[in-house]
Image (cartoon, rainbow, N blue to C red):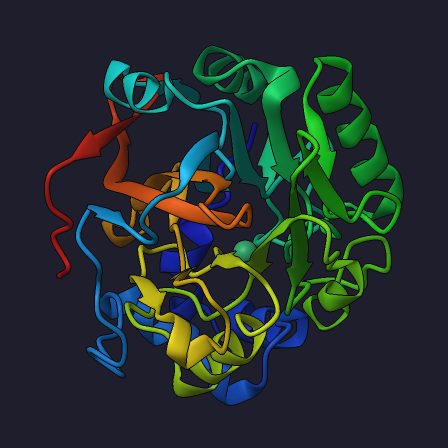
Length: 341
Ligand SMILES: [Fe+2]
């Protein structure tokens, strides 16, 4: 499979490449320029400390009897022909979880990218480490992201069929907009952007349609901006509006970890403290630019409190990195510190 990630580094050197990138970009000229600057010079610290990180282990609400322990990971990106593996440290972290949720952000295809270097392709191999990480029938993979349209509806549907044939649960499509976890948790997907025209995945603006008052509702949005270490004020405002309805927000797309925060009950107008994790970064990716190689893995307890209401209790999260292990193999593992903070 042809490597595509070099594109990001080489594009500013080619006038034709710049023209093609601007023509194909889902963003404005200004946003596309910012994207290239962050790619070339490293992640942005703009809006530093607009939100603060919670510790890697904290209890959001007391007296919650855990009914479910659910793991969340971020973007499962194009490995460009490399074999992805998952370290024992990550397998151990999710071992006591009942379910796992991740964002599958590439199409399993052998098709050419037709001159569109940002298209994200997976080989079928990617399903092996995901199978080793967690049982497929308890793994929910989201497709409401900006790469679902890269190879058109047929390419997307064929890829989805391959993934489902291996037993994985899928959501984020118009046909299946949310994940039903057990009888009590709904994970609702939605994306703010799509690189290509795509009418078969859920948009974030429609996500509240799928909220149900009878369950614990987790919003799993694909939002924010590539390589920005802190969310923009507009994203913070949007999150604070959405958390008035949803019970928790766990986001992805920025390709870099963003803050895990909590909003106390007085601020969100409910009787529960709520989680907002702005971005889980990359779970796996093949990339020469080292700032793309980081993400987070998280697990949360959801259960009934003493008033028989579903709330989130204990939250645990860790930084992770995906790094070259051998010429043909890359590995995702837990790390103690994230070098950009
Ligand atoms: Fe994305």
